[in-house]
Amino acid sequence: MRREQPQSPCLTDVEPDRISCLPGHIIDQILSHLSIREAVRTSVLSSKWRYKWAMLPNLVFDKECVTVASQDYVIIKNRLLRIIDHVLLLHSGPINRFKLSHRDLVGVVDIDRWTLHLCRKSIKEFVLEIWKGQRYKIHSCLFSCQSLTHLELFNCWLKPPSTFQGFRNLKSLDLQHVTLAQDVFENLISSCPLLERLTLMNFDGFNHLNIDAPNLLFFDIGGKFEDINFENTFQLAVVSIGLYLNIEINQSRFSGSYSNMLKFFVHLHHVQRLEVQSYFLKYLAVGVVPLKLPRPCIDLTYLSIRINFNDLKEISAALCLLRSSPNLQELEILARPEEQPVLLHPYCWEDVYLSCSVMQVRYVKIDGISGIKRELDFINFLLQYSIVLERMTVKPVSNVGSELMKELLRFRRASGRAEIIYLES
Image (cartoon, rainbow, N blue to C red):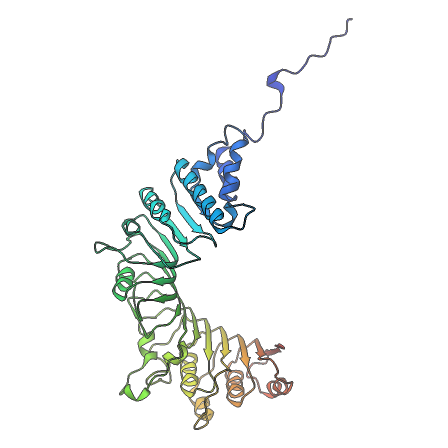
């Protein structure tokens, strides 16, 4: 029998191009994990990939999208502007998220043009971070973009047109280093009916925070302000407030039963996590500090307090919060040892012990103490009334000797499981 010659493989037997044969949703998933620069470069892989990047729903322009050898600011800026123009010009699909955050970018007029283009695309999430130069004035067209669900601005100036009636679909608002007038701020908050998350950091143009937001769940603020009022915020669960101003208030001008503590908590029925930062405890201590709140914070499980133990009013305010939190699980105490005013009379801890019930706190962290008597009395109080305490972590300031640790170990503990962990600074 004659031996047959081996046949050369036909085109149909050649192994197919695996890159080109990937399903469309897999390609989309791969592109979603790449920077915009890397995503555009995949267009050379095959014809199927060529314009896939042009349908990316999330566009992020940051330091990853510009690679130039030069350190010249003008060259970097011009390169970045060309990239954004190129991507937006060729983009053919819906744009859900647009983020512009580059350390070398100042507010340029090109941003107005991009904003107008994005609003016509019914964008859902808009993030603009201007890291250099003066605050950038947001184009008026953004205030008519009713498709927005998340708005995040850094180093911007907000001055909406007189026709602005709010963002009816906005759920998350993050404003940092911004300028806006008092009436603009109040109108902005009250005219976003679906707002759930609000972050305010380092703002100016207004001093009174009137928060009217029936669906608000999360509120984080840090800045200089004179007053804060909550209205229709009964769903608010997470609150973090830092007052960056050591207010000196003449207590004599507050007469009768006036109390910042009572006013602050009247619309916070379901707060679960509360952080009292910087000098805000001093604000809460203005006026008459009650022994406990009329309505206890039964949902509060985490409490963080920055306190000056040399301020008797602040101690009273902190104890009021503890008495009013029957289900507290975690407690963090941050001392402000740099403040050392002279106390006219000692704090009467015997009255505190008589007016307190047992606490359910399990974990306590105490940071920044220097070992003064009022700090030790406070720790002693926590150990005596925390019947289910499992762990207390104490971290003093530097240059505190071992005497503090010895003093802590002498304190009696209501919980037999309580463990004290002493951390060297």
